[in-house]
Length: 456
Image 1 (cartoon, one colour):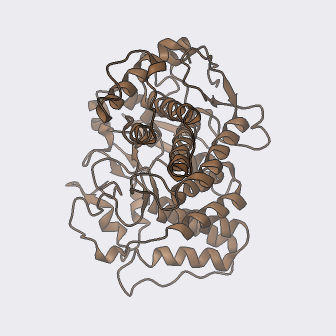
Image 2 (cartoon, rainbow, N blue to C red):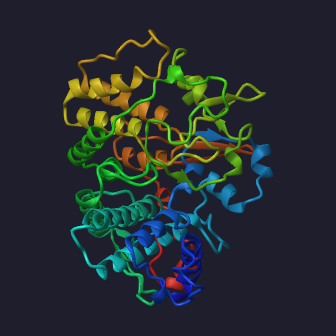
Image 3 (cartoon, one colour):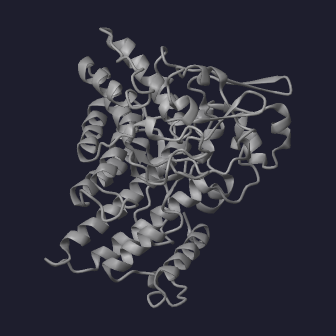
């Protein structure tokens, strides 16, 4: 990625850094001078880098199949990108000059690299070692999270047999804007993500200074999410277990207001690390985006998610209101309910049925009206796996995770899903393992950087 492509990102970093500490950055224009010199400056840059809290996977919710819109609503959409993405057009990025899923993610990468390079120039002492390690761990986490999010959108689903030749993402590890970008292999991409996170886990504070900062539970949680995407269930089990051993609180949904338009508060007890799926999709607004009727019907009558997650529309359909962000923004961060479900799935896949059922029932008991939940039992590990995956879809609705789940589960015929949408009498279909599960890289990125485009 060349100088021209990085200029907007540099400007944003300079602006946010300047807002953090005016006497640190005095309207300097040379990126070589935009270097934090103290641990405090570095931490402020990581915390305030726009948009460090964004989980840049928002575009995937358009096509993941959890909601639908009417033809009238579709025709009223003003953003061509949203209209094209909703019906899985291959050329959905035609004409655009900016895409958060790419630009914001690589802004996060650049911020992390600026901090990591600054750390290399800072002396480590007995008095600053703990903070030094924590800042380095946080920067590695930020870079790994950005690479992971880009991979969920712009690369093929991970397949061990082909990952060594499949194209991954540009693994930029320098703040030098003149450094040439090339696409790594998919194996190299995931190796870099997991290596960054494993190093971060050895450095970062177990309990962060603030709940908006990553600690060990967050780093372990992202490792679990990553290994799940890779189909490495032993590792996903290991790290979801480590995350839950560090932080495992669950909310009793009986304590929440059923009538509230925002039943979940900011930084509620299940949030390990906040994050927001970067989307303001018009098609997801209440009364426009309607939850899939079959999905809605799958919630039992006594399941409190049926009232806490959904808002009834005037036409009898339902829209989503269950964001763990506590705001109108979709939650895309890490939470304990996801960790319980990852651990349960991996326990089932590794034939530990007792442990899988224990985790599933621990979570589900907090979701039903008091006294109504009957613990799920079975002697069939495959039946348990199917139930866990169904509850995963119902629990983690609209968190920017469904697309990755479809990509990995479509490889197994028993879990493969065919998605359909109807607009103006025309049926649009996305088959399992369709090449469109990998988004094209926007043409402005290709022109500016010269990296290889995805092929279909």
